[in-house]
Length: 308
Image (tube, rainbow, N blue to C red):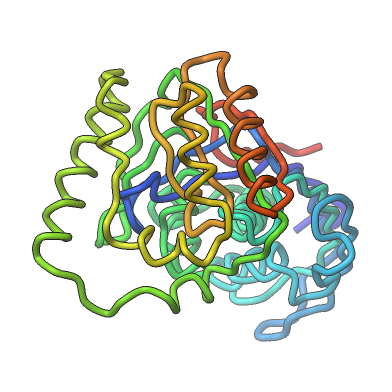
């Protein structure tokens, strides 16, 4: 394989769950990391060559710059799967997705590595195989699926996904200055839930997908209600409940934690995202939590690699 080949990948931020869709629902956003992978050479079989990673933007002072970097790990996993060996890569990451925010930064890194390596190898796998590898790396598919495919995705227990076109709305985000890892956030969840809570979430999730597919926005507030994870996570994030209430007061159709949090997300009419994001950020600040306001749109395009 020719050394010096270069691939550029854009991998989008994602919002998982959207309330009741715990581990099943995800939406791609028009906020993306950019990753450049340069193939230097292939290493011998079963050997992982060193990598050189250049980082700018989010996480540039803390993310690893060697083979333990998430992008490199994902590229190596795919290369081992296809060729039984690993490449020696130079990787340049321009990161715009905040870390441990609920906006899928880990999934974006994994998907960028997979898609970049896949393009360098001539794209030998099908989309289902790529999703399987991303799911394997992440441990769940709710962020990985929309990062790969774009739009709104529902992931199935068989590690498959159903993709819908993105809805016409704004996505307002308020991100407090608090780190909240997925591992820590899962530690606060109960091992069992009542039948009543399970049925409540089934109804909410079915309604949420129907609303997003049909544009029946009047029902979004009720459809984004959740009893499986938010009641346990929200008390650990000061100001989050107040921010969600402020988003609704400012005109949002519905609000939820962004994934596991700590960010809060609101689905709003087109053009209202900035005002709603600012209102939620101000509510966080009033609770003693400075927060960043972001206004995004859903992204139809998932991770895309092109040779440069």
